[in-house]
Image 1 (cartoon, rainbow, N blue to C red):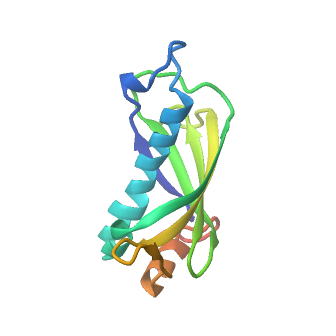
Image 2: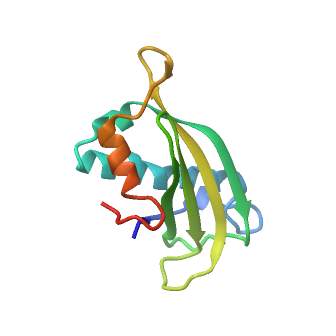
Length: 143
């Protein structure tokens, strides 16, 4: 189906004075969800290289409704929209809870670039990485 779904739990310290998860902390929750896909799930498929270097080159977040802190996990759905030789774009849909049909509170996108930390420069995606990411394309078959 092309969508990777994971839960992340906001922390009490993520809350602002209004009882909402602060906008900047929402970005951290997106990062935690992205780690589940690019590091944990990728490693499960034998792709440890991604965890050794992939950086955010661009980030866009649209906040649609307040994300109210409840102590429960929120749901983050991710898919790959664009896949190039040396970058890829992840799309996110953030739901306020794990309950079926819960409201979308934010959408986001990140332009990701594989990075060679030792050389200090971007690198191309390996063929196995491209295959893994292609499985998470919207409308794909999800690995």
